[in-house]
Image 1 (cartoon, rainbow, N blue to C red):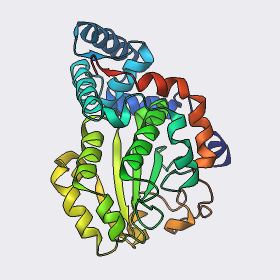
Image 2: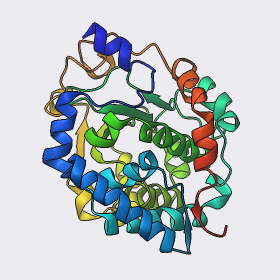
Image 3: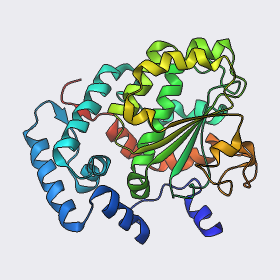
Image 4: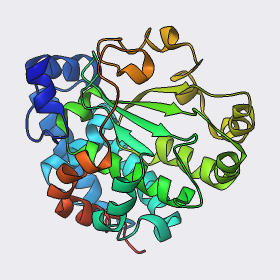
Length: 293
């Protein structure tokens, strides 16, 4: 584990796929050198012909969308369009969004965290603390969304993550009415539209943990926007960590979730630096999408 850990921990892994990941890409995403080459060529042509959207057209960038769409160029173009539409609709939050604008809230507040290690399937695991660790008076829900948005841009840079997908743990420990109020219908709809339409990543599982009785108020807001595909990937565990461990091995989980890894003692201050190293990619990405903003 130690080698993998040091390589995964707070380090955005660029430009390589492990041999077993190449196999997963072939089996799950139809990715072979021939399919990939033809799909990149076709998507580039489709993109050049599209006047309503504006994206980079280098191979690496196109592959982000192609992997999210099983190398079907037409589907990838459609994903580019829905992503652009979302960005336009939420331009006030995401257009021109730079890493530096979020640095303080990433570092000061433990709302959004990423596990040091990947899970037993090699997937990145993000934790969103929606309970007492989140004070909406200090960090409004718009900023929580912007943080989640920023993390997904960084995750896109990892070919391993493009192929293997991501897992999210939504931790509602200590949820009270002040957080429930901040998780408004507007926020719920925006977050779910983003996950389902405008995120060129494979969201494999969403785990809800430590949610108290009051959580049913939150779920009532989210539920109408959840489509069937995502619904099948959502799992509710409450305080039953054995239930969570059916999906995420205790070996990869920290003590916070009754795993064998040490208790989480890291946060934004630890993993913000690798994000900063890729500030140029984030800056470029913040201008892309709609042809006209």
